[in-house]
Length: 169
Image 1: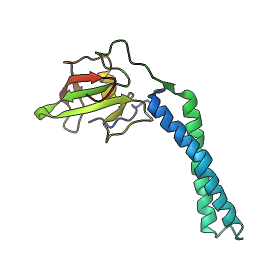
Image 2: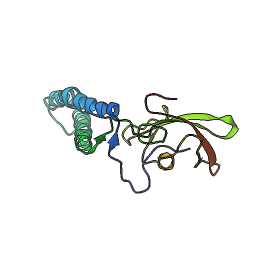
Image 3: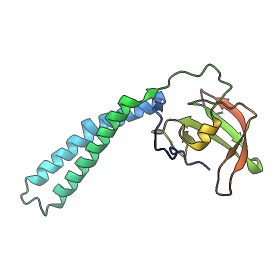
């Protein structure tokens, strides 16, 4: 099965769902307005205790600040790059970004996947990145089409049973 991650090139598609963009914006706001000020306060309190070279709270707090700042830079840059896809495609009988797809595979096994942006993947929900090989294979396909899904056993054929853009089929 496909893990939903980007392909070998490392390029990440700019596409994101409206909910995905809102989640990134909420994370940015939470980090900037809540977490960073809290950690900054803790670092200042730890610094006031004197010798910083052996002050674990100070050292850990500075590390946390670097991680928060790194994530803030990433989120700011990523939000500038993303393209929010908030419309359904004209051909809703074909698989495109944002689609939920129900597939049937070996031994009558069924799965539901959704094609989302690389920032939104969630294997537990069946959300795979548009950059993933399986998603790229699905793009443009229709109900009844059969695709080969790579797997540990070398791969297997899966038939597209349903496509929906409003909710999981």
